[in-house]
Length: 294
Image 1 (cartoon, helix red, strand yellow):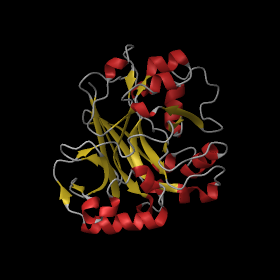
Image 2 (spheres, helix red, strand yellow):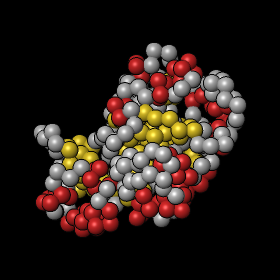
Image 3 (cartoon, rainbow, N blue to C red):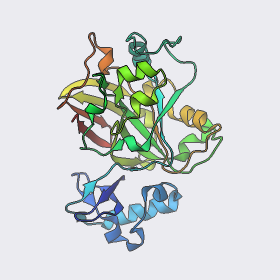
Image 4 (cartoon, rainbow, N blue to C red):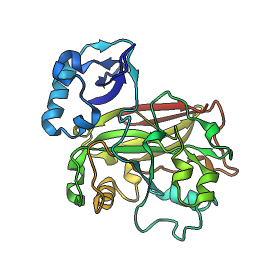
């Protein structure tokens, strides 16, 4: 099941729907009135019983005309957790780019975790505000996003996937010169609109082995990234264990797991994004996240 957050034509309230194979939004509340007003955070924390209710509603839900998709998690409980240098080939290209801020290790010995504020989140189809980066170093990073279901602190690696509600797509848009200037990454990566997310959350029951997922990124139709999630240096259970060791994860928290090789700074000279460029990211089963630079 692919869950989405949407607004109705002429309406302001957010609702949860399901995404049909043809891209239409299925109106779950029309099939089960008790779901009206349910938030994606409530759904994520609702456990197996909630998932069963959503699945039963999906089977009967009509298609809804005029629905506008929002990011599947329009506002995360905390900042979005992001992981840097988490694919071997990207770690190498980043180390050789001159933008790594003097890090000693090409491949980090422990997960490199930073964050993006929720104000960076935008939906599929919404514009990336490139003018907010005055330095001309705009870059893309296609990533698999993990959406937390059952929260907790001190989650063991062996139990970590039980705490996953589902998977989405994130574009970790980055102002490279700001990233390098400030060393710490939030000011280069946390700008408004710099976290496109969507189009949907593919529920974890449909992804028994997330390492089988494949991520591909295109810029203006040219393939730039292509890698299986199995290439992660630190896998999803390891990331959940590391982050939750002393930080409580909550339903709806999102972890962007890192990007593979092929980002703009990996080219010589770097191939930064410019106004009008279109970034398209696809992950197996989740769908396509596409955003243009405004």
